[in-house]
Length: 314
Image (cartoon, rainbow, N blue to C red; front, top):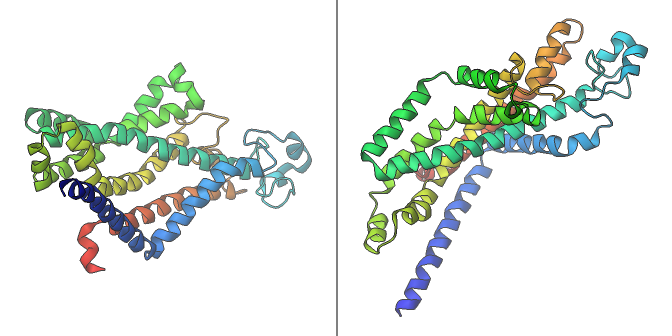
């Protein structure tokens, strides 16, 4: 009888957990803005993965013949059948470079959030679980990082390490990952700490302690899974900030280095032709704005779907 009861408890917990996520998915599917944002994110992922294979030109190829044969016309969209959106002043295909910009933005969005999770979750978990002096020390360090201007720290790191092997790795993209990630983990650390401070007073934690479960197992197997919803929301809402930071760095010339085609770099290069060929600025700017809005809509939808307080309101 005891064995059956013991076996039934994990199965009941699993069914209850599956039901919670199923309800959250149902609420998310009812949010039209979140669905629109999610569809555009999928579209960006498609461009980033398959776009370079669909375009006839590599993002760094210079079509010298288009420049010499068409002159100014090579800057204008739909004037050259070989380049639907035209080329830049160097003869590089704009469509291909926009797709490469999508790959860079999504890479930054994903990898930076991995860095954020790697730093923010352990720091927040240690502070929330142990408390006392460790909590005070970690939170004071977190406050210092939070008070320091993010963009200034990112620029300082990018400039300081740009000429090193570390800064040249993947055309400077790896340095962008690290720089943005080191300034973005603070929110997740505070969130995880707050979640653990409230969850560790629950009865199931006291029961686990009474059974002799180790602290590490309680945090990893019981507390962090219960805090997973808010963490997912924080990560999703943090992606627009990472994309905007990368574009800002590229615009200032201290981010991803040529020949990679960051959207921010495309805007900077197209400024000189803003009157004669405004699409060189407008197209990457529209892509940046659409990506930021889409991830924001998706994050808001996930927050509404995963917030337990909203169950009774829907």
